[in-house]
Every structure is written in C-alpha cells, then in structure tokens.
Image (tube, helix red, strand yellow):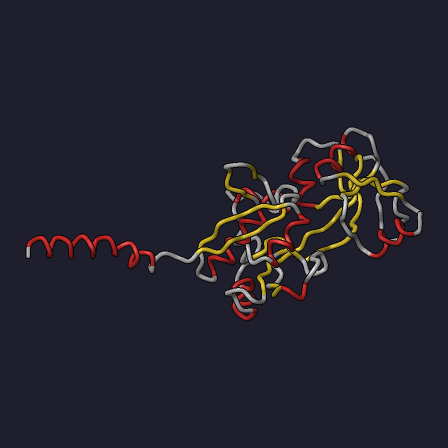
Length: 251
C-alpha cells in the first residue's frame, strides 16, 4: 500500500504543472515586418527579443485581450504568406491600404497616426501645400504617398530615388547627396535628435496605424475593436518613445 500511495503522490505531482498552466496567460504570436524603421522597430536579430514602438503598442493590445505575447519579425513580402498560413495571431503596425489581402483580416481601431514628411537642410525651401514637389526626392522602395506626391512622381514632374530604408533616406539628405527626402516624422526625430542640421520642410501624407488579426483566428472583430480602443498615446507609451512622438520628456 505504501508503494501504491507513493506512486499516486508522484502521479499527482507530475500532473500539477497542467493545473498551474491554466493560470498562465495564453500566448499570442505577434508578427512585425523587419523593414520598419526606428522607433517602430529598434532592435531585432538572431537571439534578440525584438523591441520598438510598434511592438510595444501591439503587446498592450494583446494584454488588454488577456494574452501574453511572443514576437516574430519577417521580411515584408513574407508577412501576408505567414498570416495566411496561420503562423501568426496578430499583425503589428499595419494599415488596410498597405496590406495585400485586407479582406483576410480584422483591423483594430487607430492606435496612432504617422506623418510622412519632407526633410531637407535647414536653409532649403519649404514644401507647402501649393508648392511643386521637389524635382528629386529620396524615398523608400514600395512606400506610397498622398495624391499630390503620387501624381508628381507619376507625371514626371518629380523623380524618386528609392532606397531600402528610411535610415538610408535620412543619411542621403544628411550627407548632401540628395536635397529632399521623405521619412516618417517619428523616424526623423529618432535620427535627428538635437544635433541635426536638417529640418522638416513639409508633409506628404498621414497614415493611421493599427493592429490586425486573422478573421479565422481566436480573436473576434468586436474584441479587437474594444481592446484597441483602450490604447491611447501618449498615456500608454513607454517614456523612451516620448521624444519620437513630439512629446516632452516626463520628469
């Protein structure tokens, strides 16, 4: 009997983690494109947990839904493929007009808005709403802009020099290899800091950034809308991101 009691006790002890696991939050698999510039994606690589504003906001939405989260980064071309293959539960930093298959996803409420801005040297002419788009502009491959800028490129009034990242755009303008560039305003503040001889010379377009989940996944549209509505900048943003949102530092 003693042997049987010992075996029973061991069996119950082995089963204990199963019961404990019920009290642990389920995990959502977050997916983010590895092409995002800082501060949206500030750290990513082999054996490194990805970080950045887009991930921080995405984690907050997941937490409001009652989930923990793991994060995966992937090239932009693979993102729709991974979502369609069921290998991710939530897509971070997305707008419906950017995504190849928007009918596959439920999109949450706007988390924040990102302005694309013209940058140039401080003594360059501003790009106003009625001004012509500069003759040559450094841009990022695959980025789309507002109607006025798009028409200037399509009609040949301006030419775009496409590079692989917003950081490259910033460096081209900083080193005088091209006069004007288009980057996210947050990205400009990230790279410019307080020491740049560059400045914002006009606005190209505004995009509303949110998160999205597969329509056939575990999260309903109503749940996503409610959870994303609860997230607000600047109240929910970590202090290290405030400078890139044009906000004063907290004391």
